[in-house]
Amino acid sequence: LQLVESGGGLVQPGGSLRLSCAASESIPGYYSIAWFRQAPGKEREAVSCINFNDGSSAYAADVRNRFTLFRDSAKNTAYLQMNSLKVEDTAVYYCATGDGNDYSDCRNPNHYDYWGQGTQVTVSS
Image (cartoon, rainbow, N blue to C red; front, side):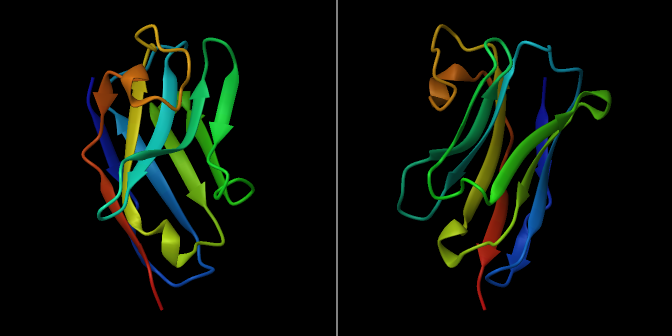
């Protein structure tokens, strides 16, 4: 299973972007899906995740009500809709999927087996 992100780019503060994460094959329905990001000099952090096994989901506090994670199973694609973007949202964004690996918290990177290569999002005026 391979994941390919797209949709990143340069956007002004207050703007919107939609990131896509296309899978090379069908993602099992019980797999979790997540978006992480890593800014220069910072650790990778979970932006949003959904655990389809138990129905739980999570958003980082600073993106709640601005970002939305959703999937289109028919297209084997997950998305991250990002609105009201801020300069501090600048980072490389990664999608991930997996069955949890006995880590229940979908915000934990160890929850995932498959990662994309990342797409750069730059928010600047």
